[in-house]
Amino acid sequence: MYNCVILIVNKFNMKTKLTFTIIGIIMIIQSIAYPLFSDIAVEMMFNVGEEAKNVLILFQIAVAPMFFMVGLMLFLSRNTDLKTAKNLLLAFLIAYVPAFIGFYNLSASPLTNVGIPDFIPDIVMCGLALFTYLKPKS
Figure 1 (tube, helix red, strand yellow):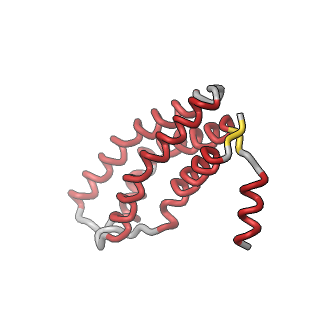
Figure 2 (figure 1 turned 30 degrees about the vertical axis):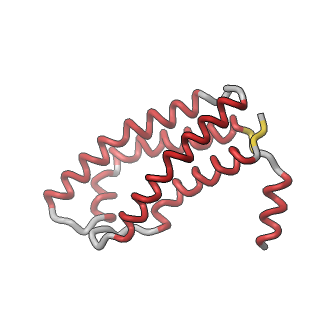
């Protein structure tokens, strides 16, 4: 199976426009969902008292504009040239390094109920960005 995946990766190139569209839309949806479902998400993900839950809800609402900003920038950059697209993808990948470190620390904490499945959208976006960076097609 591993050899099959390598053959597929070597055979296909990914259009940067499609990658920016997919990642941009996912991040814009996240920016809308975070404030709307912050109460439910905090209740499910964290084992903390009421005061900490209120702070976490405020944090969810506070980070939503960052997801919107990055998602909108990527979505609006769909028609950029290949060199600029690769630079944007590289910046996106570099920014995800500390994010994944944070995800690991979050999942290892006894105060949380999170694991790998909770980070699937981020893993998909990062994998898509890496694949497109390595095998771009204008």
